[in-house]
Length: 538
Image 1 (spheres, rainbow, N blue to C red):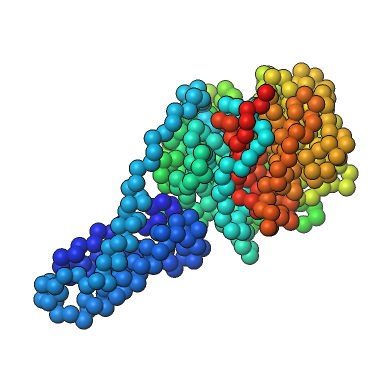
Image 2: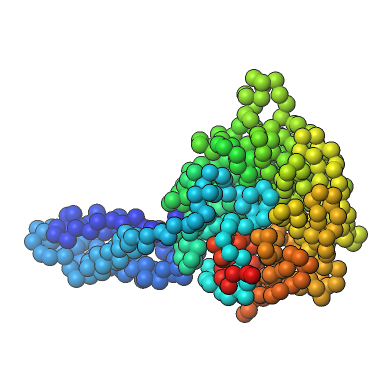
């Protein structure tokens, strides 16, 4: 469902009862369609109280108007003016029409837009995964705006493109999750549109996957589902209206964040593991599915290929027609796959698989590309459970062959993506520290060994840092956002991003911060999606 406009506007004719009756019936039906969906109605109340009141007035006024007209002879109804009660329907509809048709203020040109418009916007902005789209690096952060809905988690990482922010949410219910995809004004946090279902009315599942934008900025692509969800879809939306363009079904869930090159989007469908051995459970057809990577043509939603790979839940990176992606639980590998269609590969005599190499542990994080290297984090432990014998590794592989160039062992798993700027890689570690590496040889430049020097002691860093080259921005599992000096890893400032009256108790702050145009945007477990601004760093 697209939240703006919330109802179809039905013209109300005021001169004749015969013309008025169908309009009232249609208006009443549209209003009831919203009122009879409590979750959507409460969402509308929070976002647009005037519209919610208008809907209630429409229902009441239309019902009274119906009763009045039903009691009058048809001839008299034609002669008389519309009863006073019908005016409330007209007023309600007019309020909604005005809100829908009110022109937005003219856009302020974004100086980075022309440079960025030729490339897709992917998870962490680019395949160096630095989470930075240009502009100032703000410090001394102050709250700018907040977007939140009651009992809703913001696990997905937002992306910013000029004056727009795109994000997704998750709402946990008994045995099921729900979600919504939304577009906000980056300066005010005002909702431009929000969609929470497919055109056939099937509601979205919760979102862990983060959105990606096509190079022409006309389409947004994102995967559905949290780890226990099955039978969800890859979704493509129109960025102007939020309307769903197409969906591609999967028997599994898609926590992987899509990567785009040209007219092809590539993403992983992850296994649903159960039990102490973490073996894949049965899909709706009763067959255990360990996972696969697939490619879809964006222009028409046609699935072009599938390739079996165990638990590919990290975000792939694409360069020159080859996608690089990690294999997680029961896989522990990194693979390079050609993204062309099955037909094109057959015609050219090429295999889908370019290379596949083993990793020391499950490779769960997003792949980072820099120079001739494929950087992948892996480790024991996952987003929910730590391992009794923790270890993490950063692998640097040669793009063309998969050969190991260097390997750096760390004290715990690397689950977030590795952010790179100017030859420095900032690595998030599950034990709560950030580590800086030299990408030429993998040598440690600095690390936050002392828990007192970390974002929040031993609280895990499960998200991906943003690195502008001037400052680092990163979050902890328990809901703190820190600004960090990239020279030595020193914490410069910290901000609590969960709701102060409802602290995050589940440790589900997975959302990664995004920095662009002097604004930092990040989600959390209970604090919604928040934006901060500040003075430019020296």
